[in-house]
Image (tube, rainbow, N blue to C red):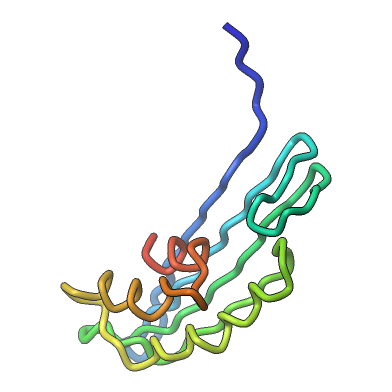
Length: 125
């Protein structure tokens, strides 16, 4: 049976304890294609290489697990419009990581203006 690697997704999430009852969460999502492909949602051909590289940093208070700040950087995305979500994700500031958080994130980031890749990274925690 033919078995040839064509795509790799890497998600890394690191948690850091700091002074002052705070946690810093740094996440990275990278998608890499090893062959040229078609991005069907854009109806465009794409060369081999990184398709997505998304970085997320959250500062969270403990013990409440409340998001105090959140930054997103998208060095590599297939469509410049993907970066528009960076402003929407700011609405998560003030939310608590608690039961129901997954639903909150999906409501805020999972609509037409959303980004499945960023949503996955936020929820990977």
